[in-house]
Amino acid sequence: MSKIVILGAGIAGHTAAAHLRRKLGKEHEVLVVSPNRNYQWVPSNIWVGIGRMKPKDVIFPLEPLYKRKGIGYKQAKVISFHPEGNITQEKPFVTVEYVFGETKGTQENITYDYLINATGPKLAFDLTEGLLPATNKVYSVCTYDHAEHASEALHNLIGQLKNSDKKVKILIGTGHPKATCQGAAFEYILNVEKELQKFGVRDNAEITWISNEYELGDFGMDGMLMEYNGFNMKSKDMIEMIFEDRGIKWILGAGVNKVEDGLVHYENLEGEYKTETFDFAMLIPAFSGHGFKAYNKNEEEVTDKLFKGFMIVDADYTTKPYEEWTVQDWPETYQNPTYKNIFAPGIAFAPPHSISKPRKSKNGTEIFPSPPRTGMPSGITAKLVADNIIDSVKAGKESLHHKGSLGNMGAACIASAGYGMTQGSGVSITTFPIVPDYVKYAKTGGRDINKTFGDIGLAGHWVKLALHYAFIYKAKMRPFWWLIPE
Image 1 (tube, rainbow, N blue to C red):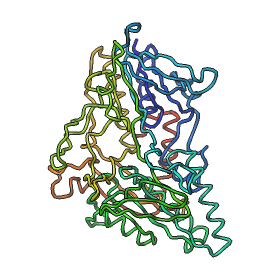
Image 2: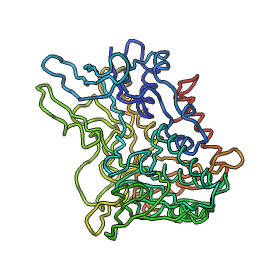
Image 3: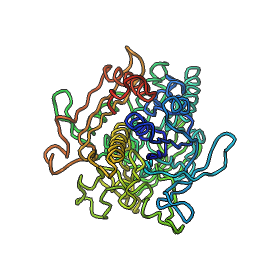
Image 4: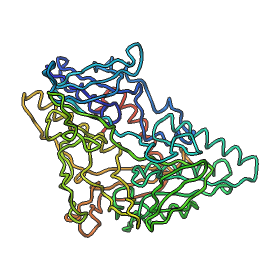
């Protein structure tokens, strides 16, 4: 019998657990350890953040589902990793601390045969002074409760505008010089703009995009050349067109370093220190690793064998110039090279480098997006990790036949731009590969132009809404859920 422990119950962890349980016999144990009571479909937090959905529409409790499906579950957070065991425990284990119920605060050592680290990122609000959700008039949509607070504040502001001639400033974008998730902020700014239109107060609000991107449409992927309405168009030009059409201003190359009440401080690539006032802001924080420690059998620290902030996997982490980066640097199996029964799909693995070109201000401050971490690659990499573990368990020896690098993997992103079956809209973008291959696709910006395209319209909203219900269905492991692709 094998015991597979999954740390985290987000898109990657939940996907891995579901596939493992479906394909492995009941004699094998599948155990999920997560501090969260609920699963949340994160992409729909945007709609929670404008009040078009409620938290109950994007979450459901994990424990009842796991109990029905024969998946173990412990509501606990990881404290430390012990990949060699210790002097009293031969098997590898993780130390966890319970965060709920009668056992809250107590610790336990959980042994494993295989470990999947799907803990995702720490939302590092603390890396930007004053960037605390629901304080200083700044909000977040990174979690469903953050998004609910943002919705309340947004609609309070809209209420004020409806009853006065007040003019306000809205600021949306990234809240750290190396923040990622520009896509989520982009989707939110379009929805906020549409919400202001819906309530007839759009003319009372100045909306500004602030980002660490060098150009619009970078999205942490160095931008892209895409097919749009039969023509080749740069993502920069497409996003600029969208913003101009909606009267949205933009500030680029901005590394936000401090937030005060209604005031953002930032440094730009020219080395200038500037400020921007606002009445409502939504800024994406930096993402970081959780600061886990690891110890060998003799209780000596071996954290550097498992973590570079995030978890070390089969990537090439050699420090080299941007011009020498290649798609071959990126991992394919998400297996730790030292402890080969540990894997880190989704957001938990350490990228070998950024995808966007690294840039520094004239003062030496790094200002550029970190690699984007989205749901589609998280699900794909989690499934391939699960399949490799399943094959290894069944074969009784290591099997790594399932592979998937972000350098040969595509991604689709649909950013809603307003909610409603007849009034909604969406910006649909697909890209292949995620990490550009400048050798294979030298003439089209590192990507296959036949698989990289963009579109704008009502159909995009319908697809986005359909995906919401499809992936909630899939996450609840309803009949034939596995037929829905990752």
